[in-house]
Length: 238
Image (tube, rainbow, N blue to C red; front, side, top):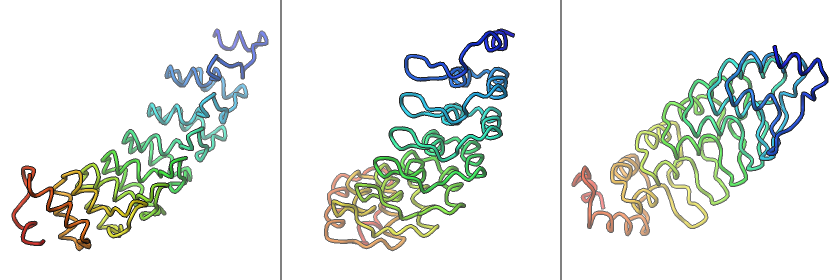
């Protein structure tokens, strides 16, 4: 085949494109498993990084190429490599809600507690995006559920802030602390009420979240123009 002919003719296997991608990365992006296998067998670096710091494994994980991920692992791919933003393959898969990819990475000892440059972990990313099955997969591992990012926010805060009620419920079930404050003094309850996510507010209140004066203020403001589905029981709680 052409790839073999080029390599036998002296083509550099680690030659780069203008943005730093190797032939292996290009083959992964194109979804060409036979070429990927041939390049790896001929010594292509499974941990090379492009100009953004992305590795072949990150590319395969982001596009859910499970078979090619396994090929990369057989050739020593590092599950915990980070790109220039500090993101791992696991964080990228969590962002897209790719449960099977997440499970494979975790089985290969990907660390779910690695934080990116903003302090976000894979759990925070999945919680913010509302990917419930991925959140569950991460919680089933040794994940720091109350880890705070550089703004002091937890996975629960991010889920509450965008109204991911099912994720909020699961995190609370698994022991998330709903009274942690971020750097601005905001709790998950305050975030949910400030963004008018009534179901999340009700859930947190009924599960025992502390109604601080600031929380009461934001809840009251929300109730003045309630969204559909908020019950009268919340008003009775205040």
